[in-house]
Length: 217
Image (tube, rainbow, N blue to C red; front, side):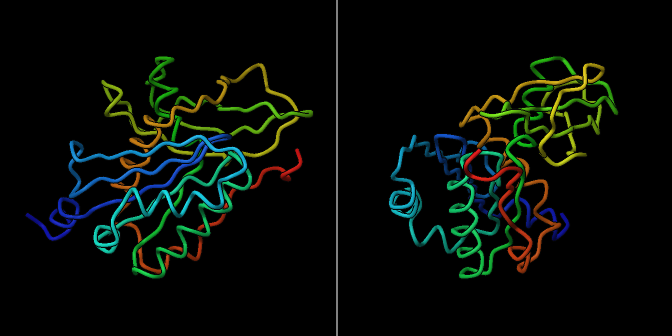
């Protein structure tokens, strides 16, 4: 067994995710899916005060020190939630010398949306969008990178980061963004696992919130 494979099998992962009205934590011990723990909470105006308190209740200081990988979602989601999660994750990453990486909320749900709509053909692309309160949409583009026979084998890559678009092109496939806290936490843990060996301790410096729009839109 190679050292890299041993590393994959013996590390623990913490993930933090947010939507428009919820924040979530996920924890996986030693890459064992059966060890998965989740915390999901709806928030109103109390996110700032609750985020750290709830994290402390979710994971002990001892287990937090043993984290080998930290991954977060960076939006599109609630503006304040994305900002606070990034600040919290960067701080933890620096303090415990743990690699940090990030994924857009649309990338996290892309596999689930592709599976639901039977999109399995290699190189097939589609967009995920979210309608804005005013005019326009936020949309990101995704492509089937590996044509697996089952949804668990499906690999999808983000080829256009979520951005503002005025209209949805009728010639392309578009699916509305649908958050599913628990399923998205599972996928974020899986993405974190696959990306472990490509991370480094200073990776937190590159992790920033995704702000396609201003917080007032």
